[in-house]
Amino acid sequence: MTKSSAPGKIILFGEHAVVYNRPALAVPVMQVHADVEVLDSPRAGIWINAPDVDLHAELNTLPSNHPIASVINDLFPLFHISPLPSLEIKITSTIPVASGLGSGAAVSVALIRALSLALSEIEGTSIVHPLSDEQVNHFAYEIEKIHHGTPSGIDNSVITYARPVYFIKNLPASNNKDTGGIIETFKVGVPFTIVIGDTGITALTKESVADVRKLLRMNQIHWESVFDEIGQIALMARRAIESGRPDMLGELMDQNHTFLQELTVSSPELDKLVGAARKAGALGAKMSGGGRGGNMIALVEQDQAEAVASALISAGARNVIITKVE
Ligand code: PMV
View 1 (cartoon, helix red, strand yellow):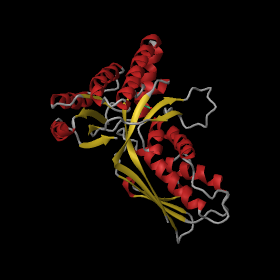
View 2: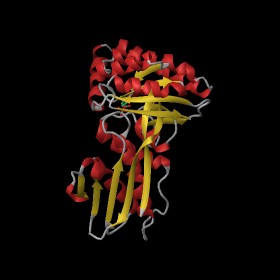
View 3: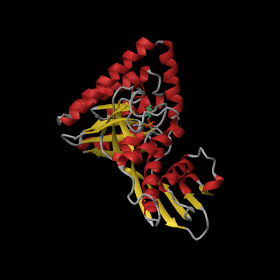
View 4: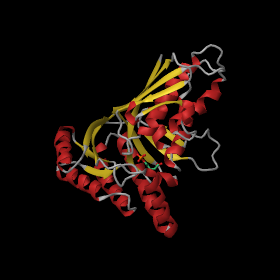
């Protein structure tokens, strides 16, 4: 039996602009995770058991573009195993879906790792080592394309490395192995606390990304300059985090949120939670991820975290997570 677990993630700065090659920052969220177990099966076939999404099926009965089937079908050829083994794959997750916490990428990463570990143990395979992080990230990015259409690659990267990540999407001309982009992990000078508030509204990232693309087509000069501003914010945020000045992040979050409102990807519910967090003493707050629903984040002093969390619940948050970035 092999097992693997992958954390959730949250984007701190730079969402949407990252699709247009500006930098973004994201961190893992260890409080939530996807877990995968691979076991020998007494029944012939590859059986997938994912109770959270009510999926109980044999691989061949799933459509070929199903994200879970795609992970498995992409991996098998690499190992040159014939005939295929009989396996039972159990997938569970505490990460809410379609809310900006990277649920799809976390399932992909945990599944790729658990399955590659299981396959590398089978006699006769051409690969006797589990996959490298870079390979895991490459496969996870391929699956993100099924989930999101034109993903930047930030989700699969931060979840694969489970470290704070500064990310710039690959320029099309780049020859790198395609993992979505240029990934730099970096040190956190002084740990800091963020509160994540969930609107409880699920929203498709694909749609908000498509709407931003429509805006861009209508006034490219204006929106490119907005993306530049967001990129600068992400860069300044990285410097503040590395140099042990997380207190500077609050104002940067507020500024980033204003640009996301302008891009029409915030929503009344997100704005309400952002306002409630600031009122309860957060140093700054913004929506996070695709928007229109999903999560927002607030920077807090450690001793304010509970007060901000309960203000978010009073303002309608479905769930809150307090997490330390270190
Ligand atoms: O909603 P999330 O957390 O998956 O984030 C989407 C982030 C975007 O920048 C809007 C899209 C992307 O692919 O990076």
